[in-house]
Amino acid sequence: MTAVSFTDAEARIGRATIWRDVSLTVERGQFVAVLGPNGAGKSTLVRAVLGLQPLAAGSATVLGRRPGDANDRIGYLPQRRSFDESTRIRGVDVVRLGLDGARWGLPIPGTRSRAAAARVDEVIALVGATAYAGRPIGELSGGEQQRLLIAQALVRRPQLLLLDEPLDSLDLPNQIGVAALVRRICAEEDVAVLLVAHDVNPIIGYLDGVIYFAGGTAVEGPPEEVISTETLSALYGVAIEVLRASDGRLVVVGAPDLHGHHAH
Amino acid sequence: MLTSSAFTGLSWSPVTDVRTLFTFPFMQHALAAGTIVAVMAGVIGWFMVLRRQTFAGHTLSVTAFTGASAASLAGVPVAVGYFGICGLGALALAAVAGPRRSLGAESAATGSVGALALALGFLFVSLYHGILTGLDSLLFGTFLGITSSQVLVLLVVAALTLVVVALAARPLLFASVDPDVARAGGVPVRLLGLGFLLVLGLAVAETSQITGALLVFALLVTPAAAAHRITARPFAGVVLSVALALAVTWLGLALAYFSVYPVGFYITSLSFAVYVLARVLT
Image (tube, rainbow over all chains, first blue to last red; front, top):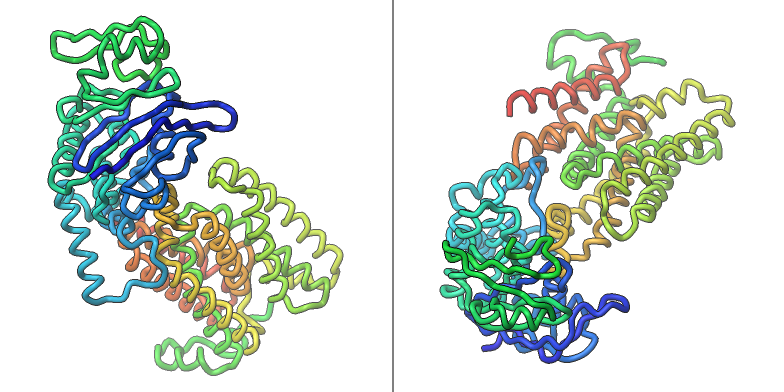
């Protein structure tokens, strides 16, 4: 089943065109990274999938519906955002909010409440956060917080997971750890994942595909195919060289916006 | 100021002393009013500390003083002034803060509103020459002369507010802790923000009537801040916040009854002691 499908889509903010002629397809169970320099429109794609950014042209379906109409089946982890030390709420409470935080009224103790608590425990175990979920979230490390936030995004059994730069503030081992976790969730829960990232290298081994934004548009394909001298040169419109370092890392040379680029 | 110790002294027998506390109607009213106020302040204060809106709470307490002095000047019941101005103040804070909850901009604008409110309150007190002793109780609180109809108003306002907060508890918690995800999940984050400021205004208006405008924090912030330090469980935190607010209010009223010093001093000092204990022990 197709999770996300864009056809010749165009996004504008005010009068500025962010990207155009974007066509892409993400299937259930696929783990796809959204890459590209700052300001190329990665987060705009996430907002478009959520229906928060209307398309100026083209068409899109998300989980078989118009963008915005299937948000209850999407788990969303915004760009952020970490809880500072003064946030005295337990990790388990933050995960629970993802399940029924939007409901009015007080939770009534009973079978439904117990089922909710059981689901929260289950998803916390899935991300491997059981040991520290009972501690105030502000006291946890960036990697621990990120795992709990992924649990929060997963708790309602979404069919699509949107993760906006979840690896940004993490050190390398944690980036790899979270990427491995997302890969596992993709397979076990049959959920499609769009993960916005700066640096593709720590996660490239786990990916099914890449959507690369640059030059006012985007290309989609398998990682090795997209991150290549030919594809990126065509995309940026200038000569780009993709080199493979001796440790296997991909290095992109000559991109116009090196600031914050994925291969610095 | 007339003090209650003129009526009766401390016997040092707990049973007798507690019975003495309930002898006079003015003291019954004070205890009833204090109980209502403490419950409301404990609950609303817990959310206020969580949302880091203590500065907004402080500003509203300054406007509470303005409202009370304006009401005295206009010759209408002081409670009308408290509730009216705190509601207006909450709307003003929501308006200056704008749609985005940017904390820096909010605190600058909030401070500006507060300064204007304090200046106006001072003007009203100057225009109304006869209430020099009244000024003390507007600022620092009193438990004398609370009527049964005032208690009824406090009760109705607190009950309605707490029902609304209970119904909105989970979305409010979500919007306070995690606004971006809450918004994506369909929680009306802006509306809740405005609603909470209004509720906070009502809580400040209620609390001002016991602790005075300047000592509102003793019930609204300190017990809640101590509760946040002691437990990170939301429900337990709210219950603990209420329990601490009740304890300091009852003890403060009793101490004020048996001594010559004002109730605001006792409640504030006890509250502070609780907070220090919570910081030391956790």
